[in-house]
Image (cartoon, rainbow, N blue to C red; front, side, top):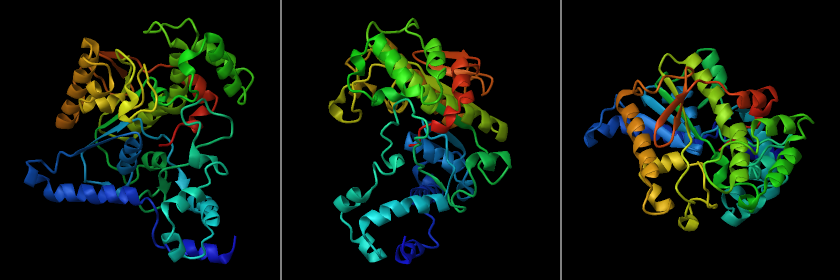
Length: 382
């Protein structure tokens, strides 16, 4: 790489990236200054985010720049791994810079949207595309980071900040996922038509890159004989549950455990297990797939009372019950910083949320398989 390209990077100094997080911190400072004018209390600010918003929540909790700006936090389906260094991110970005053909900052700033998109190395650098984000992982194929440890917004990887009792926000914390996260955009278009034979073949093809024994162990834990709440599409449910356990559910259990070890504030963990009464209406454009199960974003839709826009009308009693229960508990958490007595702190228990609250001990043979097989490293980044 020529010195000219490196000069393009140097031109950004002392900038560090992570500008979206800096925008969020600026917005929280604005809230602190102005919330009283809206009848709010600057001492009772709760932040929550879903998907990349959940990643933002966790980033802000471990950023020294955000301390004192909020007092409770809810992470819905965010990332588990936030450990990319600034140096690694800059090196990775050289691939993009080279493809632009630019030699100076003025050229970069003059690129059209089309030119920027054409220069992004979607396939040459697979983590940019993340094509298999909602599929079982392939050994050695990782997804690139959203947050970067730049020693300014993030002084160190979040787990390290917690372990070393660094400069972080010790506030009540909720970590949530949905049971079939990957069902919002499954990897194969005809997954709803799969037979159990198709299911076994796909699991075997994907997981044997890790070891010859892993496919059998996985199929033993996610068997075709497992109970299914619907009369059809059960191979789809089994597959997206397995993908979701690897990419989101099990890593976020570990995230919650680490949070509980580090924080003196209460930590809570939930998994949405509600099966909607019908398939998602894709005509609104929110979801690309007519999911039938507990898909990625079902929880945030429920919180904002939006399930009736995306599910068959009228909502079933169970749909409405889930929406009411979920909203009730999160609003109560925002008001008090605690869950009601029926919902214990983590790691004593995980709350399973459907139209009722079910509490189960934090024991999972499935998660132990993925942990000991090293698959937490393949958790999704969003």
